[in-house]
Image (cartoon, rainbow, N blue to C red; front, side, top):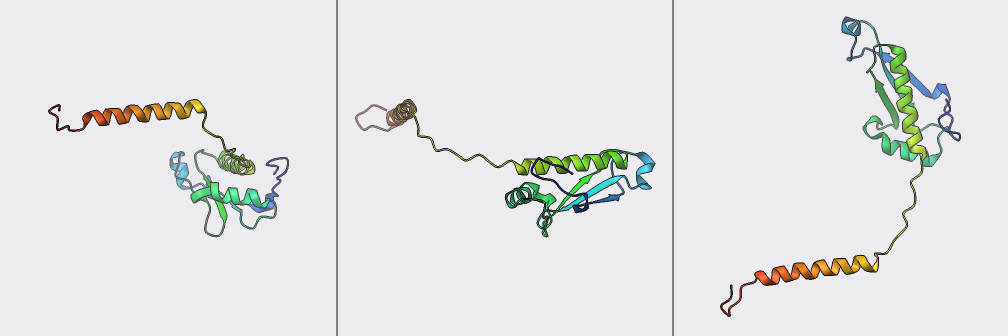
Length: 140
């Protein structure tokens, strides 16, 4: 399966298991295994570059087991085929998201105008607080 031009994952690394679903399907849901559980060993996959592997483990969140296996459940549709396609689409979307490296942050300095505005607001606020103070000269 080609995920990006640089990342291709062999079908042998994806393990699909069909289980009974809890979603739509009426009585059919009790007797036919339509839900799909896709498993992919992120931690030991030779198809992923190291940086993509790290990001995928991070963005996988609770879907990643302690052993580094990504588990995607798809049970929204009524047929195995639709759920299989949904699971594969979710998987591809996650890997593509992980393949995008975050942009470097460029430090910026505050502008002179923003410094001026900040100081002016501080001055106004301090004036308000100063006017609230109790004075002994009779003015309250």
